[in-house]
Image: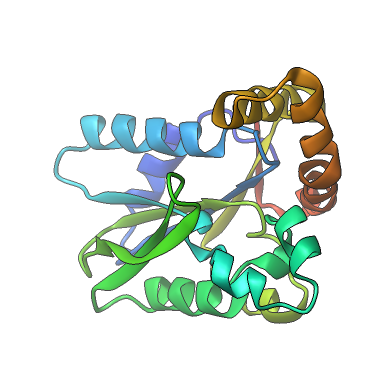
Length: 213
């Protein structure tokens, strides 16, 4: 089912008697999940000044460089960083379950891009927060530890960005971040990001709602 007006839909959800609405927003790498989530938060809080909303990213659950280095396949782990097995899936599921349970303050990690590592407990979500939107790649994934996400989202959304557009954004992002050529950036995308994107795209139909770009 397509969701033509996410803001209006979010406002309707917030008007229910639920103590908290927990939304999972999935999509390809480079699909625009973070941008959409942040804009939704701004628009929602502007239109509903008495409500509270928090946006969180899955990125803080990347395994640290030290953890990747300790793996038997360390070189592959660094090359494929961003694949499901390079995240702390169990830790992510546990935190989402805390958000779902409500009733207490929940801390959340972020990913510090300047150092390339996660920072624990960087964000605090108050127990009274009414709407929590989590964005990330594997919110619809259900293999290994990720299976624990089943039933935790009140709604799961998928940002339906065309692969070609998402890939072009990633190439540009890598060029800017690493100061590399277009060809080098494209090679990096094809080596890892495109494989992750194929997996994420295969989960598209598991979402409750699709959001067109």
